Length: 65
Image 1 (cartoon, rainbow, N blue to C red):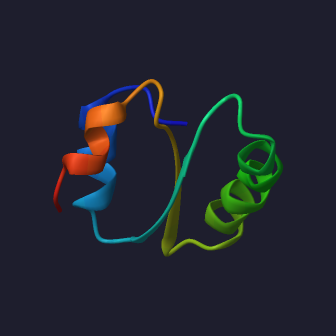
Image 2: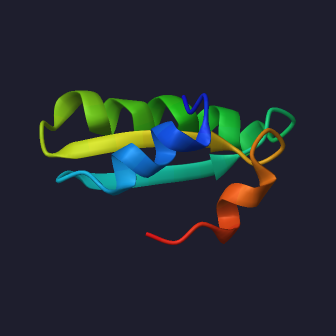
Image 3: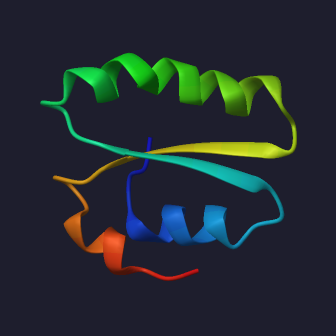
């Protein structure tokens, strides 16, 4: 789970494929998909999974890689 903008930038600027899930704590489908996305990163060395709570980081949607 993302804790700060710098974490996001370091992951998306790294060498791995990033699978990012944008969600919210109140979103039931987001909560259901979170473990699936996390497992992608755990099972694949070349994939970095990332969960971004848009209520905590609304400005992150404007960041560009």
